[in-house]
Structures are given as structure tokens and as C-alpha cells.
Length: 378
Image (cartoon, rainbow, N blue to C red):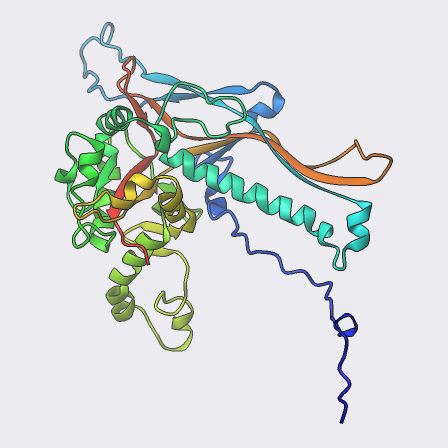
């Protein structure tokens, strides 16, 4: 019997026009961004009126004891103040195709250009906020085409990291003990061990106490119903450690029956809330340790991995817009043969800081406590 076989070119191939796009996470900082003074990440729109540098003024609280019934003249208190400079710059991207490629395309791949560019813009802003939170305060404005203000942690020298730790000693925490802070940043990281210095409920509460005791003060975030919270942003590994440590609390103190499971972290993923702290997982923080802040990969006592956690109060960071993200289109089209679409935006991200004391060279991050914790990667 001669079996008829189908030639390769005659075999049936099904092409679908439904395109699967790679998942891009939303900007997980978005719920805490806004224009009001209460926001964790303050949106500033003043650069839209022109200019590439804006000044954000700070004033400190009055600390003097004042006088009683005696003479006040000559005993007035000065107002400590500072102007923080923030630079905005451009971020752009685009894709292009031509009629020949469109003719060959079975699924309208170029039709995905606009959502892909939108995803790129969201990812860029999210990553810049993470970089800004980790950056060291500096009065030197960023170079051209750089949208993160501050000295990027990964390019800072050993001496610059040590100076940052010294100036911000009351708002940097290493693991479980205040005494883990030693003379140098690298030495402080080296005190962290995998047993005691993970992000646990107790260590998270300590991080909050550090924020409450910091001077200048860090103001908590206030919800619409009047509750005050600090908000901590953690990577996947530190968030995992905290979630495991909170299991007894969630198991024994939360309902599991009926609709209780809808809000119990034992069953539902999402933000953790403990001791007046909202803990939000931002996976890219762990990714930055792996790819960029690589000194933390082997920083602990037994060359164990460490990761930062950012405990934030009001106005911990700012995102200033010179021009909101909007689509652009290619004009040089070679007689309508080329099609190009892009996105452009003008902005700057910064961790808020000021001089303390006034007139000194100490630059102090004003709304965030940076914690470092031992946290093994999965």
C-alpha cells in the first residue's frame, strides 16, 4: 500500500490574530502618588509652565522653648529653611515598520505598538522611583537625559555611601539592632545575619520606631478617614519573610470562615498591614539587587544577600512633570512607506531631602527610613 503523505508546504498552519503580550506590572507606587501634601510621592506640575529646574522649599519646625511673661524682643527664633533643586529631562521611545513588513504580517503585530509603548512608560517611571528612593541626596543636578535626581547608589563611592550613612544615621536601620550600624556602610551591611536580621514583625516595628524618633520628623501618611500609617515598599524576598512571620497573627486573630477568607492574607495576596504600617510588595526592588545593587548580593555576615526596604511618610519622594506622556508619530515616512509611533515625556524623580542643620553640608532624606535586611533569594 502506498500511503499518501502531505508535502511540507501543504501542511495546514493556523495563524491567530490574537496576540499575547508579555505581562508588564502596573506602577505599584501609583496609589500613593498625588498632588496634595499628604502624598507619599508628591506630584509637582510647576515645570509644565517652562524651565528644566524647579526649587522645592523646605521649612523646619520651631524647636525653641519660647518665653513666658518676660521680654520676647531679642529672643525670636529663626526659621530653618532650605531650597531643594529638582531637574526634569526627556524620556522617549518609538517603534517603526514599513509597508513591506505589514504586508507579511499575519497578526498586526505593529498594532500593539501603542500599548507596548504605554507599558514602557509605566515601567520607566516605576524604576526611576525605585532608583530615586535608593539614591544618595546630592545638590549636583543629573546629567543630560537622566530623569533620576540624586547620586545613584550603584555609582556612589565607598566614601559617599559612608557619608550618607553618617548624615542619615537616625533614618537608616540595619536589621534587628540599632547597634548594627557601625562606622561604614559596608561594615553595617556585614553585621546582618540570615537568622536574626530578616524582615520580621518585630524588625518592622523597630523600623517604625526609627521613623517616629527621627529628627527632623517624618510625618506619617494619613488616610481619608483620619488614620495615620507609614507605608513600606519591599521586594519579593523581604516581603516573603515578613508574610511568613505574620502567619501566626493572621491565623489566630483573623476569621477564616464565611467571607473572612476574602480578607485574610493566609488566603489572599496583597498588601500587609501591621502595627500601623502598610507593606506593599514591589518585586522590582529585588530585581535591582540582582542586577544593579550587586554589592548587596554577598554583603551579610556569611556572604548572604541583603535587600533594602523603604519605610515612607508624607512627601518621601517627588515626581515633577515638565510634560505628561503623550504619543508621537514619525514624519519622515519615505513617501508613506514607513510608519512610526512613539511616546515622549519630560519628568524628574527625586527622594526629598534638605540640609540639617541649616547651612551644613549634611543632606538628610526628609520622608523615608531606609532599612536593610538579610533575605535569601528563592
